[in-house]
Length: 383
Image (cartoon, rainbow, N blue to C red):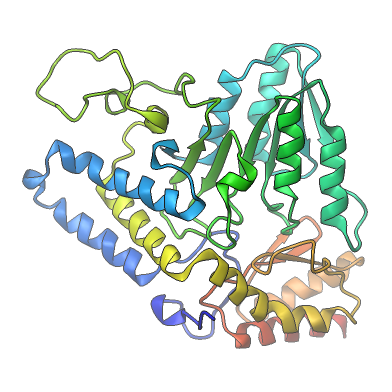
């Protein structure tokens, strides 16, 4: 079992950082890699065109190891919205067709589809969140499946809901979508790196992830993993480095063909030595831990908190409704929730309030003491 990894981070004593779902702290190795890259740029004369692409290829290989896809499927994007934009501009919508999304989905996963529907006359189908209670994730997943029919052109959802960690049955939803030839777009921002993801089990047409959370990467760094139905689509932008032969910078002519696979979807200027060095250091650390081990660590860490809250006035999700790395804690009384957030702040705990849920998102740097202090704050709010 993975042991506590706090020594690999620079988190100060007395800070109980339980907010990885907002953004992660950098591992020390990531910071060192970034500093070394900055220092290399003091004298950039030794860099060659091949160097420009080498780190991006290493990044693709690291991502491929993480999810079990081909490195040729991996594109480097600035944000999830960039990848959603590629899909929305390439996938044919028309009047009578629908785009199916869950209620309360993260806005960046929805806005481009709203615009596409307005442009083409297609319709959005928003699948309502079921009532709180045991089995919510299964009930919501089934509602998503029931909403998919012969009119469905796109199914777009996250692996887990960003606000409270509700975990969807991705394989079943994607299987139903494929039966009607609907595009499957999945945002794994709030789980990739923290729980295992097997690309072959879900087979999404587009798997997206903003990597500054559970993958510990720099801001404005995201992943697009592109399936067969989009791999030859038109890129969102055109630039020199996504064209075949672009390593040969001695040539002055234009090039007609793209680099192979998903490289055509790379954002311009993606091969930044500083951010790629940091991203690769972070992914290598995540791969060394293993997402399954991270998931196991977080589950065991959170178990005492969830066990205590089961017999309290707080509402928590059932064990099959979420993973251990992100949990939403609710109270029916708004004033109690506000008191809880006040007590949490007094104790130098960092969590997030999302809607009516106190979102708690630990990682491998957290300790049982962090959980004990949070529990103390939650109990204090009830008195």
